[in-house]
Image (cartoon, rainbow, N blue to C red; front, side, top):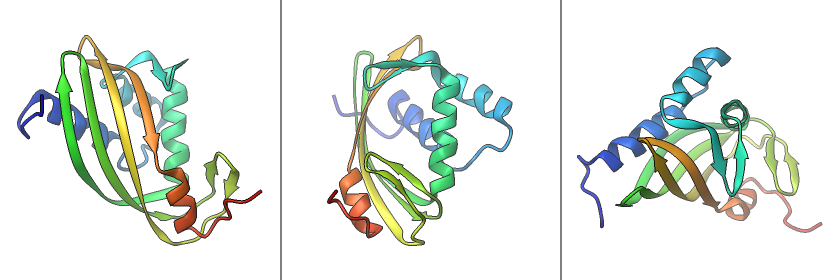
Length: 147
C-alpha cells in the first residue's frame, strides 16, 4: 500500500534522512541518535553489522559527500516493510570509497539515486537492502569505470 505523507512510514523516512543529512561530531552522540532509529546489530545487504559500523559508514559518507538536498521519490509500506526511493544531491568533497577503490574529491555536484528496503522490528530498522546508482555517481565525478 502506498503511504500518505502523514503516516508512520513517512515519519520514519524523514527521521532516517535527517539522521544521515549531516555529520555528528561526537561519536557517542552519533551512536545514541542512530540507536533511536536502528537495532544493534543491523543487517545491511544480508550482513549483520554492529551499529557502530553503520555510524562509521555515515561518517565516511559525510567525509566524501556534503549533502545539499534530497528528494523523496516514493515511499511504500506494508506490514513490517518500508521501501523508499530517493535522490540525494551532494558536493563531492572527499575520497569516495567506491567498489572500484577510493575516488578523490572532484568538487563536483552529484545526484545519487537510491532505493532502500527497510525491515522494521519493534519500530526500529533491523534490516536494510540498499540499491544505489554508484556507476552513475562515478560517472558524474569523472571516474573511469574501466580497470
